[in-house]
Length: 42
Length: 300
Image 1 (spheres, rainbow over the protein chains, first blue to last red):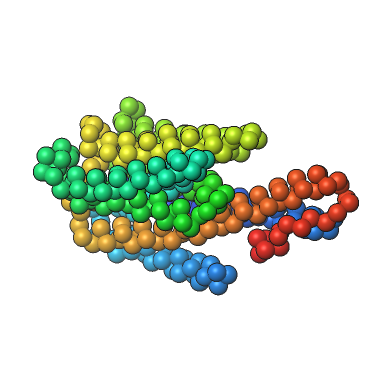
Image 2 (image 1 turned 180 degrees about the vertical axis):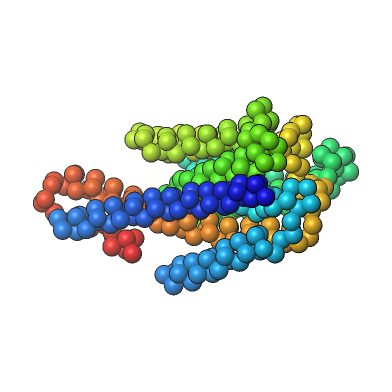
């Protein structure tokens, strides 16, 4: 029963890693879109 | 194409939820390990997805290097065809079959060998010019994410089952860690080097990095390791219900990886266009002109 916590830890860790990566993609996208806006204004 | 992305996203979310339900509820409990074995439903599909992405990176890098000269490009095409034909024929020769490790099916080897020319020509056709390099960086980055999951979930399974987090010196574990380090260094090189040769150097590094993938995969056949033996294509046995869940989970992870790669690919395209626009702007002179690059197209 104690081992089940490792199972949940593995599943949670997987989605935390994916979440962090997806978050970094979103951040990079929004930064680039900001740059595109600034370039469009010039 | 704009409609496909949200539709595929919904399908992927449903698949992932279904795979999670199957993994936690439907799949039978292992008689020896108990419920903790269910980690394989995330660990193994992540490993297979990482290998596939590194293989795509390898093919894209080879193509990128070969395209430097027309003669090498043509030679590479014929070499790839030869690898496919000779490899498939060789797996049906009894003498070669005897050389294969116990449990490894010749048909599995033939299929894998056949994938090399198929991937080579499909990638070459679908990703012309600089898109090949964008595909390489995309597949490497997403591959590293999946490989990270393999390296995190592996010890989380090993601790309750083996009693240790990591088996020092175990070739499967060490070679996987080396693989991860190679591709992390590949990404670091791409991120921080501004040389004109960066893409070429990165492609060369990727080719060497990919050589570690077969070592990782076949290490459990050729060396004594603590890592469990393969359950598919390697003579191992697995409850058909467990195998069914494993394949569903892999399909869900493949769809997810495809979506992430798609997003990362678009991000890289946009990044290069912005860089180009900045370069144009500095060439023409700050504030004197508007850029004429199609920024709005890729930003959508």
